[in-house]
Amino acid sequence: MSEMSEKIVLKIIKNEGLLSHTMIPEKLLHREAQIQAIKSRLEGFPENMANFLLTITGDVGQGKTAAMNNIEKGLRKKSQKGLAIHVPVKESEDPYTLLRDISRACGFTSGPEKLPDRGISYSEGWLKFSTALGDTPLVVVLDDFDLGMMNVERSIEPLIRDLASRPHTGIICISNNLAVIDLIKDDRIHSRISNIHSIDFPNYTPAQLVDILKERVDMGAVYVSNITPGALELCAALAVTGRRGDARYALAILLQAAKLAEQENTRLTRNHIERASTEFEQQLLENTIRKMPTVQKFMLYTVATKGSCALGEMYRETEQLMDRVGEVWTRSPRRRSEHISNLEARGFVQVVSQGRGRGGGVGWTASLTKTYDINRSLLVSVIKKVILKESGKYEEPGIGEPPKSVENLLRIPP
Ligand SMILES: Nc1ncnc2c1ncn2[C@@H]1O[C@H](COP(=O)(O)OP(=O)(O)OP(=O)(O)O)[C@@H](O)[C@H]1O
Ligand SMILES: [Mg+2]
Image 1 (tube, helix red, strand yellow):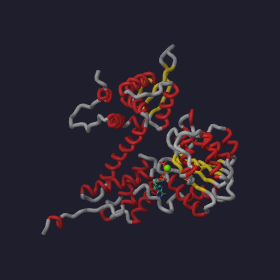
Image 2: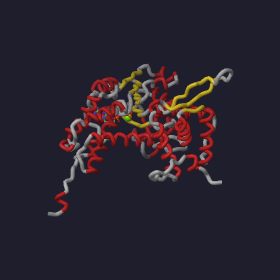
Image 3: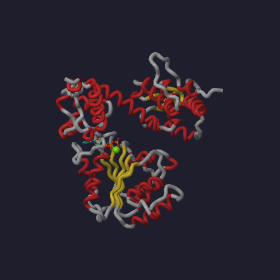
Image 4: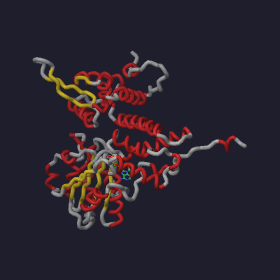
């Protein structure tokens, strides 16, 4: 008998696509009420749609984008007279680049109607876009809307104002921030649209997440007999305790655990899920930190190594690190506080005032939030890894090697 035929290979994954978080089932479980509420706002689409501004809020992985994608598909099927487009907003985006993305999503991708990448002002761009669009009814979904409102000096507000003033236009802002409507400061927007509503997506419960996972299993995602009973329940429980009911996370750790089990040629057990969850947490943290501007990484690194420190001290150390890597940055107090506000908004740090003792006035101290303080060493090692990877100096540490400090590794030889 050949060796090949003796070896039993345990397969867990039958159809990887069904476990992907990019797969959106036609009917979303446990979101009927929210979807119905959104649809009722869009009833008059396209001809009889009054202007409205709708905010859709909820934590990460609660089906906001998925629900809107399905609704938009329905709108497109319903009528070709109106346009329903979905555009992701990027961090600190300016009104022109977002307008350009909207215009391209509306189909103006060539000829004189196409907005160039740069070279014209926002108002010229708006004129070109609104002329090209004519009186076509438009529903524009701005996903991760709050990212476009982070930069106080250059937010996307002018574009929202122009959209709000256009007839037959619905603006839908998706955000993780429950108070997203308060980010819109311009009173003219509020006065132009009286029709402002908000729909919140409550966090999935463990039982709801089990249903979502089970639906994929029933569709044929995995070989059920090679999965330990209780596996789906554990994925759901971890997604609730660690990530407030994030469906994307529940799906991702199930897939990752299945891959680990296949590599080890064993049935999928609780242990695979726990390991997948830890690996995934680290990956998420790494991705978030990678996307931060360098100066924010150093600010966070300084706070993380100490647990908490005075803002003055944090700025000084950050400056030294920035000088060492030779990065150019704006040192204005305004920019500095914007960076620290971003770290606060992302839930990494909190800034509190502290008395300096009698006659000393108050000083400001930045400290890690509880979530990150309990895992401080992990946070430090992940920031270090990202910074070193970017500087091209990252090497996987050898066994028993002393920890390297970013300061030493980034030191430029005299
Ligand atoms: N009710 C559901 N039924 C089935 N799958 C779901 C459901 N909700 C979410 N998912 C799955 O989880 C993925 C993530 O959901 P989605 O992208 O809509 O989250 P989100 O609320 O937009 O999160 P974020 O705030 O991070 O953008 C979806 O692509 C889908 O695969
Ligand atoms: Mg989303």
